[in-house]
Length: 266
Image (tube, rainbow, N blue to C red; front, side):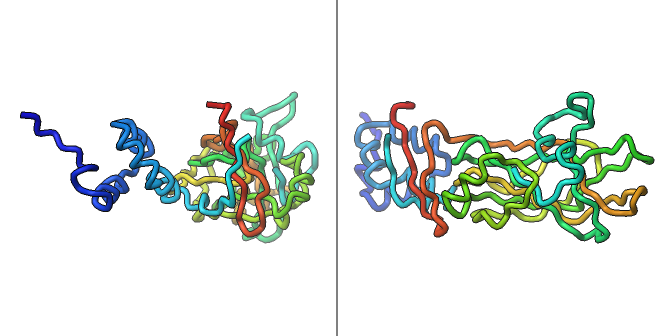
């Protein structure tokens, strides 16, 4: 005797929905929808995939509709010590030391910011890696790290600001042009000449494609002018772009945006 039971049919919609909403992995939702035509219809009709996405990425609640069709707060000796150097994972570039340096400060508690344009306007970020620069050409070879770091993800305040930021990363301050939709906890930075990993507590959906790195406090004083400097050799962001299948249009100060779905990509 065949004793198999389809609980979606036997238990009713409310109980079945309660069971399927306990799935936490998008792949499990896809598998459930593939069991039969009835399960596929049940998953789609009750928006189970959508509810899971909103649970994992609450930023998606700001979708207004769906359509189908780096900056540094200061730089010392620009352009030789520009933020652009942090994109190069080498100590030297074109026979010159490759790093970004802040201007000198008398206050060791000063903070600096670096702003980067990510590869996609819509992406999931899991971790950021930063390597302080070991100033090997100075006495004592100091490692000019920050005391701690914090990360923000977001988008320009207006489309006009976005057109002004096409050449990021750059050395001029631009923090007033952004709305940050995510702010991380503060992570301690070690005074070590290596690529340090800062893993976010959970994956974060970045809507707008901009990352700010806030460098808090300065660990090293320069013996030449007795001022404090932060020097960064390399920055690396780990995540997954959702383009070209998805894009973002018209991100408003309210946080509402248009999600663009490009069906032809699939």
